[in-house]
Image (tube, rainbow, N blue to C red; front, side):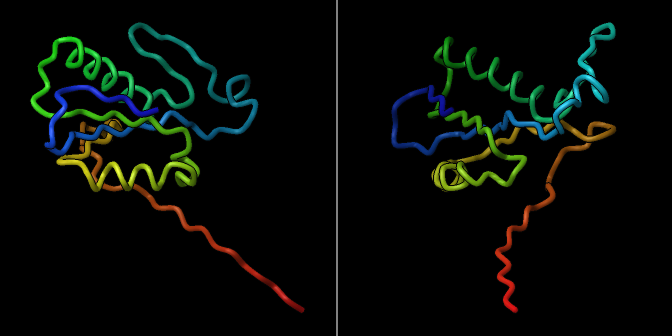
Length: 131
């Protein structure tokens, strides 16, 4: 999903990236991680992944779009396949990122509020065995 807002100019946009997929085996909700609310906290698969950041970024994006206060174009990209290495969205992410003035990723902070500056990678290999 690509959302756009802000002025129509030749300026490079600010790109916000989020993903909405969470990789858990079937049955996780029933057995291991049922969704629950405890006070003002939500627990469940993906709650502390990018989903919270995506929600907050979307709310901010909508507010800026409604108010018309963006000084440059804004692009918000939400992808469905990050957890498996972005096989269908990689080219779109790369193209939008190369054309952006800045890219913001909505990954939540780590313990103690530490900013996320890197992530694990994904390796894909084709193995051909003969004999």
